[in-house]
Length: 77
Image (cartoon, rainbow, N blue to C red; front, side):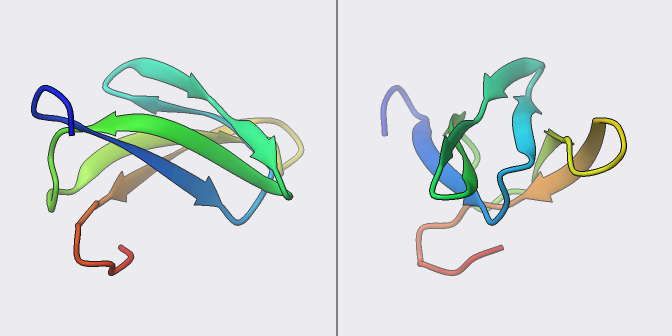
């Protein structure tokens, strides 16, 4: 934690996500072991956070809206 926020690293089970948007900021994926990996700042632990992730898995790139919740007890949401 730094200045009231956390930095998390999240890995999608796909390498077809090339960027995500969080609070209007674009984060580009790092591809590793067939996964799209993002390192992003999070300030709201336990609260649904809206993100937009771009996937190139379809005939043309598509931005998809998600809500992500980060918690510190080891559960995935």
